[in-house]
Image: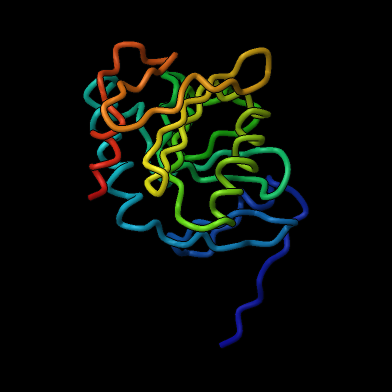
Length: 191
């Protein structure tokens, strides 16, 4: 059976669409692009951080890969590996797990970089620009291939590198100064 792919004129049309599945889609030039499943490594690292932040903030403030973030540019939405949301988001997201541009941005976004030049470019350049433009105060890039965690902080509408952490370096988070994790603890969570 041939399925006709819908074309959307705007983000509101996309938000009202339901194909009856649990698939995640990025909206690119009005077309749906299915988001592939995450690797086990990415899921393990994001899961470890989910637990750490949930113990600190409560489980409702921590969202996994299913949270959708509306952004400017193409694609029009992203699904970060981990998102720390604001208290006000909890109620706002009760019907749909989507943070719109009209809402306050989340506090922290985390991406676990998958291997390959395309993925590297997407996380280090494209997503960085979109998250910066959306006003997200803090963005982490966890790179298992390079064995680094890069923490970026929004200052004067631009991301500035707080640090690039390796091995036993304690991760310095501007938004969560009491966080007591090393790069090795996070990176080894995927092993």
